[in-house]
Amino acid sequence: MMNFTEIKYQEDEFQLATYAKMDIAVERGSGVWVWTSEDDKYLDLYGGHAVCAIGHSHPHIVRAIQEQAEKVLFYSNLVYSEIRAKAAEKLVSIAPDKLTKTFFCNSGTEANENAMRIARMATGREKVISFDGGFHGRTADSISATFLGKYRDIGKPNVPGHVSAEFGSVNSVRAVADRDTAAIILEPIQSMAGVREASPTFFSGLREICDKLGIVLIFDEVQTGIGRTGSWFFSGSEYADGVVPDIITLAKSLGSGVPVGACLVNDSVAAHTKTNDLGTTFGGGMLSMAAVLATLEAIEDDEMIANSVSIEQHLRDSLFGVAGVKAVHGKGCLLGIEFDEPCGPVHKKLLSQKIITGTSSDPNVLRLLPPLMVSKDEIDMLVEVLEK
Image: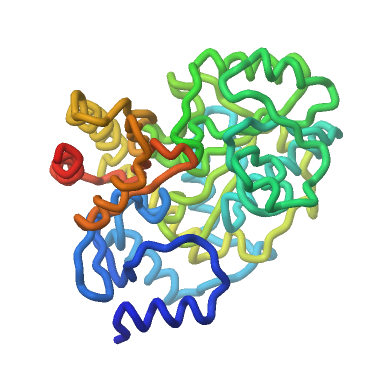
């Protein structure tokens, strides 16, 4: 087994540079904990960037993946599949009313690309409105809809037809929305922007504009979906003023680490999609479908959504009055701790104390994206370090 220095050298030598990595190599995990190549134990309150919703290596998903792997790892959508049928039915059964069809793909950016494509096919229009601070992925259409920091510039030349509005402002949307607009796409909570939120009336205002002008409303729930914000979806919740979009996009937590994305679509929009309009080689593969079904079952069986609500309140109560903490943003297990000064040193200090957290494009906001089964005692470990 290689030590950390050897692992770091080999990765840096043979991989293109991507993220600025933490100086640890994760070798195994269980629940909210991971162990490194040096056998150090870390409390993971970042969950692999909101992916590990049910905790690391949950027995139910490990068993489901193993059993499926022993049958067949993969066959494409050219054939029918029992596990795909079960996963699709389960996902639709927990979705808000009217979202009755699903399309499986491989990632969040693919889900968003396909959602915008579906909207364009349904409306015969090309223009897409997204929001300042929103992040939708790194492929061509998705990065063109991303008006956060430098990402859109990385994607140049951008796909034409993308315009931005001010997140939280219905009037700014009215100023750019017209009958040439195919879709409005947004993250209900802007995670990477610093866990930015909007009032419930913002979402009902968007629904009104879309209904009036025949625009497809897309909620990018890649991070907010699958129980993370205190209900199965942000869509349809009180935080969205009960608004249900025409399309929901999903990924990250959906497969607990097995790559998978999805679009949930209502009947009206789905009616415009015919055979061969969409395609994917790996989307809907048997292994990923087993992961989706097992993830949803584990969240349900272990009552993780109720736990995420309890965890949010516990963190808010515990941080009340702590010096340097200005506010707590977000819902459930998608939370941002805003400090009164840049939080980079806090992030580094926590890591030195073997607690993994995340930063954001807001230098003062530390992000928490823990597994939904995180306990209050584990949150107290974070609070104890912050109090010091």
